[in-house]
Image 1 (tube, rainbow, N blue to C red):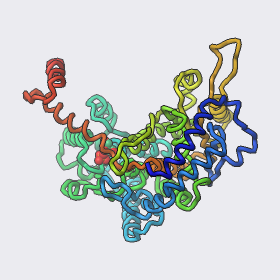
Image 2: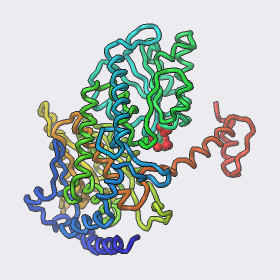
Image 3: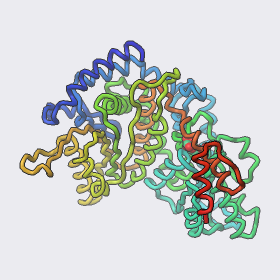
Image 4: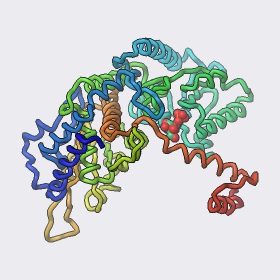
Length: 512
Ligand code: F6P
C-alpha cells in the first residue's frame, strides 16, 4: 500500500474503533444532516444520512479518493486508456451511451452500429422483418449467460412495453430448455444468441438445442437462418454462421455490455424511444461522474461508503433491497457486476491485497423480503450494509405502503429498537445503509441507476488497486468442468485428482 494511502487508512482505523463501539443513538442525527448527506440528480436521490460515520470519517474518505487520484483514474477510463491491465484493454462501456471519449472514430462507428440495430428492431416490431415463413415475430428467445443475460433480463422486464414476449435461456439444464421451447412456435420466434466470446459452453449447448428444435419442428434445416441474430465480439467466428450479425467492441466487458448491441432484447422489449432514454440516463450519470468532485459525486460516495463498511466496520455482506417492483432482478444483476468485478485478492501490481475486497452482494424484491430475510437483518448476529431502493411515484395507496415500508426498514436497521423488558424483541441496529430514491421508475432513472453502480464498481477497483474489469477466477472451474465432463461421458477418461476421479466413478452408474 502506498505510504500516503496507508496513512489515511490508519486514520480511518482509529475512527472505526470508535464507531464500532458507538450505539446508534450516539450519532447526532439532526434533520439538517439530510442536506449534507443527500445528493439529488435529475430524478435520483442518494441519501447516506443513516451510515455509521461522521464528518471526520467522511473527510478522511474523500481525502483517500484524492490521494488515489480517483478523478484522474475515471477520466483515463472514460478517455479509453488501458484500465484493465491483465487483459491490456480499455473499458469503453461509457462510449456505448455516446459519452465523450477521445475515441471519436469509435463514437462515429458506434452511432452507425446503433442506427443499424435500431433499424432492425423497428422492422421486427412493425412486422416488416418476418420469420422464415413470412409470419410476424411474436416472441423473442434470448440465449446467453452472465453479462450476456442478466442486464437484458433485468431491463426487458423492468421496461417492457412492446407487443413482443421475451424468453431467456441461460444455463443449459435440459428440463429448462425443453419447458421454454415447448411454449414457443418456431414460425413466430426470433432467436438471439448473445455471447461476447461466442465460446461459452452453456450458450453453445443452448444454441445447438435451439437449432435442433427448429429443424425438428419446421422440417427445414435452413429455417433458423431467417429467425436468428448473433451478437458477439468474436466477429471472425460469427461471420461464418448464418443469421443477422451484430458486433460488440472487445473493450466493452460482458457485465457492462447491455448498452451495446447486446441490448437488442431490451430494445425489442421497450422500443427505440425508451432504449434511447435508458442510454440518456446512463449518459447523465457518466457526465456527473467525470465532472463532479468526490464529496458531491454519487458514484464516488457509494464506493467510499462500501469501503468504509467493508474494510473498517467489517460488514460481511451488502444487501440490495429493491422496493421498486420493476427492479426485481436488480440484486442478481448487481451480484455479477460487483462480485465478478471486485471479488479479487491481488492488486494490479501482482501483490496480495492486504485487506478485504467486496463481501457478498445479495438481496431481492421487497416487500417479499420482509417476510423472508428481514428477521436476519434485524436480529441476526452479522453486520451488513444495505442499499434501499424505492420510488416516490405512486399509482394508488398500496404504493405508499411499499414506500412506507422501505423508510421503516431503513430506519430500523440503523436505529434498532430498545426493549429492556423483552430481550426477544430487542433490535440492536447499527447497520449503515443508503436510501436511493427514484422520482419515477422510467428508462432514464433506471439508466442513471445502473451507470451509478458501474461507476461505483470502477471507483472501488481504483481505491483497492485491483483490476475491476477482468474475471480470471472463473476460468479454472470451466477448465475442470471440461475434464470432468469427459469422464462423465463414460469414455474411460481418468481424472488426475484421485479423489475426484473416484467421486466421478461412483456417480457414473447413477446417471440415468
Ligand atoms: O463466466 C463468467 C463470464 O466470463 C462473464 O464474465 C461473462 O459475462 C459470461 O461468462 C458470458 O460470457 P460470454 O458473453 O462470452 O458468453
